[in-house]
Image (cartoon, rainbow, N blue to C red; front, side, top):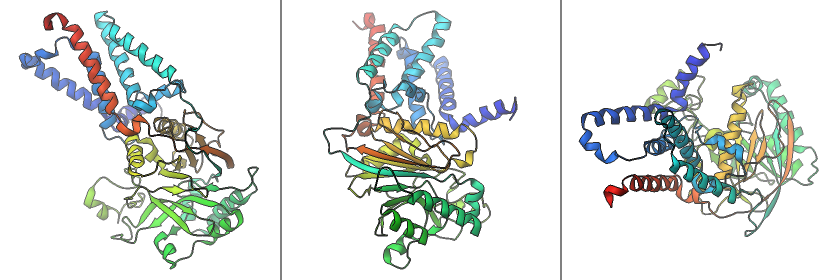
Length: 452
């Protein structure tokens, strides 16, 4: 869109992308109004570092406010990787906190001409800690190191062909099948492959995992032929039937990830749990079943209920996050903490083709890197039309298959289990404690004469 429409729509869209700013502004307005009317009730705020207080409020509003695409102020700090060693301790929230504090103090300085020396000292110590505990991409040597030969298949199936194949058009089905077959079974310089990965919803037909396991259905010929030819595991995105669906138009399918064994059995299936609002469902509760009869361009997927742990042929445990699930640190943390065994890597199956030639595939990749750093776990990012690559524990990246490119990426991945990060254990709690401690120090310093 041309100006000024793009600016107007950008401001309106910020209500969805960054609602925490509007909530914080509303809260500050209410507090200011109350302070003017009941100033005696707020006398304790005298001497509080207001920039520090507002920075904390914004940080936690940012983390806890529901957002469709959580892009936070601290995320650009990724550009300093590997010199962001505090990320596995505090997550991205600590970087948002210091960013807000710097911004608020800068505005305060313009009005008061007073420097925030507490900020200068705290930020200097924070930066030294990040540099001193530099991130490392190598696997943890204290744990058994596993090696897996992995193939990423980016078939570059555009939206027109994808929708056509899912609708049952023979030509499109044949083209999709030919691409995945030829790319999955071609020889590899790594020798025998352990795991072949396809992107989100790559297989166009509905699969019935429960019936396949019970012997009532056989696996599709395409998948059977690839397993026989490649003699490797096949991890693919597709559609799984929901036998408990209330209607054929509502929650009859799952957006799913399937792991097929070389012996043609399904090892495990993960059903996507975090569905995209207005794309994979509507936020109208019990009325969604009614709307699903008339709204055709929304998937109305069933919501998964379990966190699944997969294993490669050499017993390497891993998990899968489908599409934008990888953007939510609280979701990935819940996934990790629900398992008895810590996974060696995360497979992120994604289809960014809906966004066309825009910045979205790059933004999605950039934000996904934070999960690799926070949880010190590599991410295998497999997309339909790009960008496909391996994200390492320090936020660095392997070679890519770019946007709208058709290609294969074969990687031998060295991984280990590694210990839980502090961020996995405590989430944003440590950032909150740092903020409270700094507020206390600032308050005691400012009011030291009256207190003592």
